Image 1 (cartoon, rainbow, N blue to C red):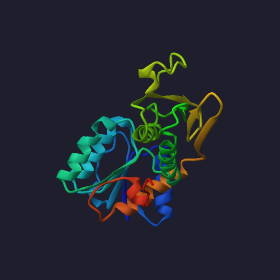
Image 2: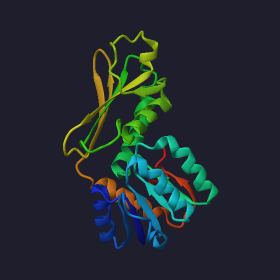
Image 3: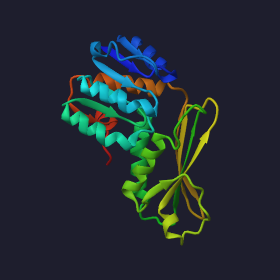
Image 4: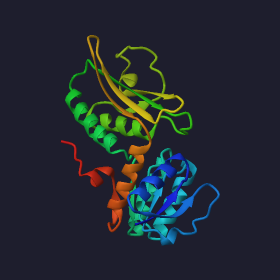
Amino acid sequence: MKIALLGYGKMGKVIERIALERGHDIVLKKDHDNTFEGLLNADVAIDFSVPDSAVGNISECLNNGIPVISGTTGWLADYPKMVQLCEEKNGSFIYASNFSLGVNVFFELNEYLAKMMANLKQYKVSMEEIHHTQKLDAPSGTAITLAEGVIKHTNYANWTLETPISNDSSNSEQAKQIHIEAKRIENVPGTHSIFYDSEVDQIEIKHTAHSREGFALGAVVAAEWLVGKKGVFTMKDVLGLTSK
């Protein structure tokens, strides 16, 4: 399989190594100032760039009939436009806030727990995410996906980075917000925790990434899966995961 790498930072280099180990070829390594020369030789493109580049990268692929997966976060206001473009061009597209196979299992666990806790109103949900200091967006796309998973199955309406004014649950607006604490610490690939706190106990689920390897492997697996398919997909499709 011939792969175009759109974004050649730390993640791009790890993806390159894993792709080569799995017998694939790299036909384009695009960084900020490079052109798309070589893109048309690719069977699939993998975008791990920056928020300002993602839409342009994805659009270029879809306009040229190249299947594309994107793990760039921080650009999702334009996600519906990319879905529409993919459909108009009869293209192939996967976006995931996190391609790690373990994280995608964690997404399912998070939704399952949220459904179990939905009627236990004495528990207040909060989250914490920790990433390396080079990460540009906060909260992480993974944290947003986790928050959306809780919102889907509970009475919570949205998430916020703002610290709660108090623990007063009578504040109806505050009570419907999931507080996410975003921390940036040197050399942390990614840690995500969901807390359910009551006056008597706490339930916590947590995923800790030990390196970028898991993200890179999942991206290559997704690229392998996408080739030959048409449509907009998610990692649930790639892994055959469905919430029960």
